[in-house]
Amino acid sequence: MKILVDCIPLSVGGGVQVAIAFLTNLRERPNPTWKAVARTSLKTALPADLAADSRIQFLDKRSAFDVFRLRRELQHVERVFTPDVVFTVFGPALFRARAPHLVGFALPHLLYDPDSDTLVRRGLEKMVDWMKRFALRRSDHFVVETQTVRKRLSERIGIDANKISVIPNSVNPIIMNYAGAVIQPDPGFAFLVPSAYYRHKNLEIIPAVAAAMRKLAPDLVFEFRLTLDPQSAAWRALAYQAETLGVASKIVTLNALQLDELARAYRAASAVFLPTLREASTAVYPESFAMERALVTSDLEFARELCGEAAMYIPPRDAAAIAERLIELISSPELRRRLTEAGKRQLTSSYLTPERKFAMQLALLCDLSSRVGRGKKSV
Image (cartoon, rainbow, N blue to C red; front, side, top):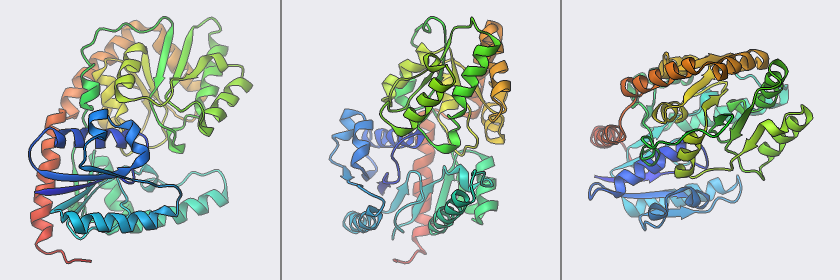
């Protein structure tokens, strides 16, 4: 089997981790034959040996208008490589493959009603979302991480549920290498917020939460550690908000981290905080469980399905209520212990090993190649 792996839609976040895990597994095996295409900007996020692999072709994306050029280049790569199946790790894909085409789905804003604060923004988002739905419907098959997402993807976008497979998430092998390391948390209490910036991640609530915590417990020593580029507009806006509320010392950024750096950041933290408004895919939950750190996240059906009793749930828009729950967590070593123990059980019961996930991905690609390939016409 020949696989073309399309990573062009990826830039930051958990999708990059999924791509790294899949490509690393491919690289370590003599079969199947494969080729990958990714943005040049992704090169720095890849492990050095993977980035140097000649089977990965890097393409520049300098502006939004480059999508037309990239589409042509992807079509050219497919014609030359002649794969049996194409896997866009997370879509929508920029092109419609001639070969059977599997697309990963992780766009939560397409699964829930819009909640933008202005009519203009809502209008723009609806237009962009319509284009993404159109692009998604051209694919042959989809892979998602939970039954919740499968159900919503089918109902909200009108995709036949038989064309959607569920492969649960796993912890990236690079991070798993650190899972058994004995590293004590730093002094004080640090909440790691391991997320790239997306509007639905709700990172803007953090300064207000820190201010509410300081008001409720003035002598409490705590810190929120984000993983944003310190030169990014998102970090500058958060830092300004924190300064305005008088909690600048409570919120820091560790920069965008490589996977080994991220693993060490988990171990150095006391707990993990993810105040997201909506999700369709995240590596934060299993990583928190594997690294044995108490998890605090939003009360969503997606989170309940994946975390069960292994998370403290918070109302993501209520800074005062969040502050009370976080202070409760800081004040109770027993609560943190219970969450950590539940997390270890949840990791075993609800998530795959990296090896099992890769085996399921290959099996799905092989099945799609033979099942769809017999009847699919070139386009």
